[in-house]
Length: 173
Image (cartoon, rainbow, N blue to C red):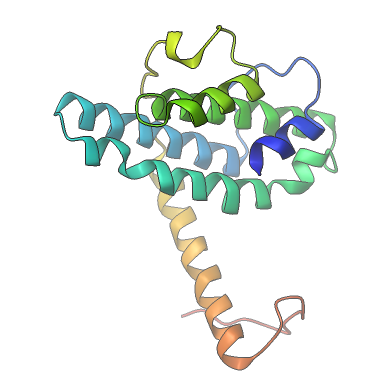
């Protein structure tokens, strides 16, 4: 559970920010801004399916890709400054996610908001988040990386090679 991991190692005085130059942070911030853009448009057009469609994808991005790839950063293995940047980004992303989820998943959104340290009494008293800068090139590049990793895992499975076993080389076409 991402929120539990967040609470266990969180440094004191984390202020949610989305200004990190770390590529994973930039990708995650861009993804959350995409969600805000798409959800806002869906709600404005009265298309609930479009408004909520991206929530499951962003939860997968946060839990499977961002936190797993940032595990060392979140533990502080790369230094306190990098740990703080990772937590500032994760805080910002989780608080924004809670705000976007609030209309359709009120109890889960409230739990996330409270555990991450939302400043108001309830997530439902917050203003709707505004769309920020979306780094389309970072999102595109990360999609390529994820596709390559998925193909590699598929080939490992086909060849019955354990994930923990290092490979001598990998060739991409």
